[in-house]
Length: 280
View 1: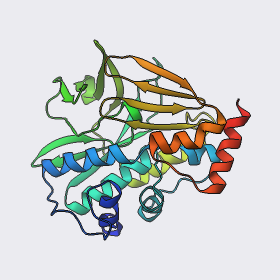
View 2: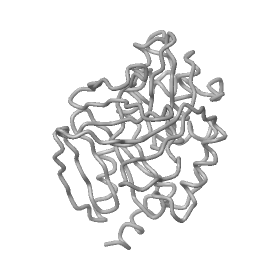
View 3: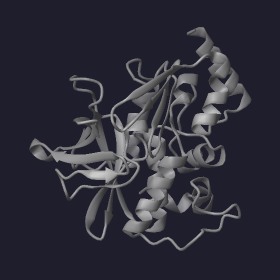
């Protein structure tokens, strides 16, 4: 399903800090809950969410080889279709049962958006777990149990819960301070890689896509969640406090390296700075 047999698992594990530079797996990985937590946390801590290729007008390819070249070998980041396709391939290669889901983003007010977010459901010993390495700085760092709806799940200082609505719709929520906020809603319908190709085409090319014309880079840290949106860097704390910092064009590339571990090819870096400077 996810072309896990085409993935260089050793290179992926080295990229997220669980392997070695020789490509040897640091330990035997079994498709159990302990390994699922370990891989999910390592992936979200290491590979940043970013949609810079959309901003630069570059095509976003979802074949495993292309994703591996970009996110693993070039040490770039990606957005949900890339991130979760890579995670799905790795988990499938390890031996997990992985299926896709499509979700509606609920962080943008009361409007009814189209299904554009891609996430995963992984089954371990008969129990389904929400896995998502592609929702950016507000997303979960660890798997979230789907069989325990309504219960708060702590991930360090951050809290999540899955709420069930009518018609079997599930909603992932997070707590910010004392307030619970919806992140996204999804149905039990399974999505396949070909469905993500369609969603990716919309998100990377449609004039109404939220990713077009926007500098967007994010990383969900353990204690602070960091996001760069155009000319502003924001740091979100678990109690709801947000620190904001203006980012000048001459600081952009250094900031991407320091905050997100991103170093773009020379051509892309120059183009990104030019776009950023045009909005100063």
